[in-house]
Image (tube, rainbow, N blue to C red):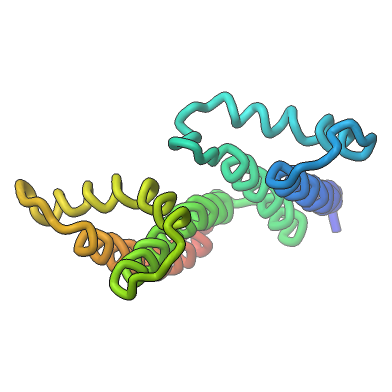
Length: 197
């Protein structure tokens, strides 16, 4: 094992621990807690500077949903996988770097495609079978209506489609994009890994 492999293996382990701390910090924002506790203050001091760097990008916030922690984790995950790959291989090629980058970007996009597709199908079924839970459905509708109606206008320009129809189109389209994207990214990853440089 050369010095580069050793340094990158240590860096990879450090980044894994830091990602775990970030996940804990992010999850703790969902629950009420004593922010004055020494352990929580240390966690804030360690994680918040990194997370705040991503919070300054306004495009990562859509409505009430803040995607900046997801972006922070994606970047850190890329660096960890890169360090791990260099640690194992003892070298870094452009192909390895591009394959890792492609898989990470697709991982984030695939998550959104899958989430939106599943939520659209669940909401469609809830309307069809008249499931209760109006508060939940109102919240989901506020998330799903803009992309559903936008996609409906793409498929049938100048025509108003019923909300249930647009939900079904949104669900099927997103799930199909998720499947097709996984296949395409798998093929592209193999091509990139085979690059000699």
